[in-house]
Image (cartoon, rainbow, N blue to C red):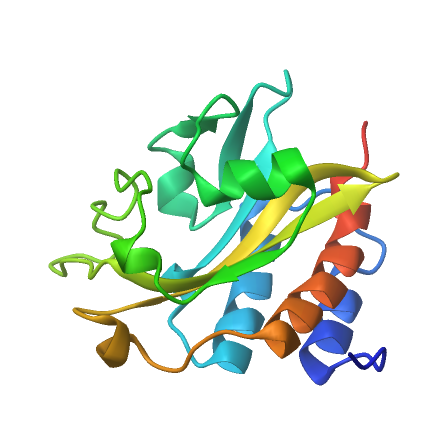
Length: 174
């Protein structure tokens, strides 16, 4: 893998420079840059953080999901939980056929539109001091895996890992 910083990682590093918190507005800007880079819609980008008590994950973006609920760290099938718990990146190009919670997939993020299921996903931890404090996920939704678009791979993990390193400053304990 290359260690050269990608364009989107540089753009996001500039966005978050000097920031100490990833609020929904900044999160939306980061999601927009990632969506453009990965050629997905902004509702296919999620940024999650550990809730203050550290027992669940809460959404920063999509903002609408932040108002719906959280994901307990005791969940055994949630990829975001596994990413944070294990501190390990992962991509799954058969996500639509894997066992996972679907409650958030059923939420209508845009007025009048139903959401297709997630078919492919890449998930990377956001780490501060060697401890995972959140996760970034980019998914591809569609009626089928083929309709969802290109598979994710190691290069996508590298890009998100660089972005996660930039976002870590926004996840520092207060």
